[in-house]
Image (cartoon, rainbow, N blue to C red):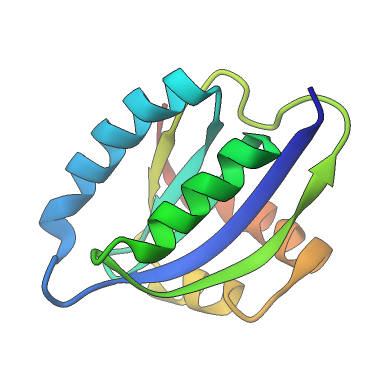
Length: 131
């Protein structure tokens, strides 16, 4: 299988609020297992950043569902495309990470393509990770 990855940022809608995040994670984990998607969702109380990887059709379909989900606003793809080698989050259908630093995801949203992945890597050690 040719692997495809996509990373986006979005904000939680005012109508939803942070209480919906556990449901997003729970449903995503189950759905991603069925579609062989792996990845990580980072949340700071206001903003999301998600890295997803898998079959291109599945990843693109998932990103379209997320973009249309009323719990998200300002959906912005930072980088996407095929890649070779190993999956980055191969053992996590959807890992979840929390950061208390609201500036990290806001700053990340400014970057695109390879720079976005570099800055994403830099923020991971500051997050509270939950596989």
